[in-house]
Length: 265
Image 1 (cartoon, rainbow, N blue to C red):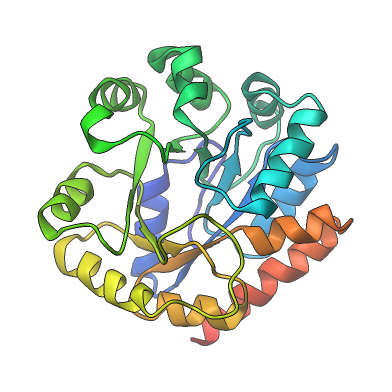
Image 2: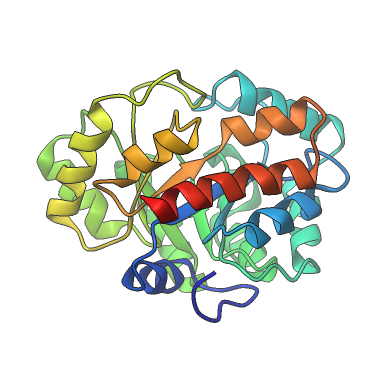
């Protein structure tokens, strides 16, 4: 980690500081509650060089996610994971890195906007990704999040028109999430050509950290995706390791390999 970042840290300042130090940003993902020792997995990611961690709060119908994250979500739900249990775990975990919750709007709506935002902050989570909440439907959650100091990360796709992209970037907090490909999350054999073009378009309209995700399966993918952006989100390949029986040590090794590749450029 670059600089002093403590538990419950705000996302954007930490990422900006790391970027200013010349570091490409690495944001791995873990499904909350996927296994009994999931907090050890989270700690291993931070120890291996993650600049922030995206924590999935599982939902029964994860429409944006491919088969690997879907299976990880079902496994967590099968273990009894809920937003409350995941955030209770995080509340006592003392993770020295910014945390971003990724979940679906049904989860937010059921809890209530203001209550959910407070629950995040109480759990040391200062960022939120709600991918099925459109720009037009954002205001109620946006107000509750801003009042609670929760940074709402917004996604931008390769087909997003310029005017809408500018508005998304203006209202995003924490970072702007560039979606490499049209479709669901999941590993790919190669990085889409649209990744570089989208990163360049985003960097032309915002000074927010621009982090690319979807389909980043190898360290080489990460280097290519980060070349025109500020960093990458890595998810499905890590969850596949956990689903196959790997543990915190194996995840730490994977994240460290992504970190070394990004540092080498």
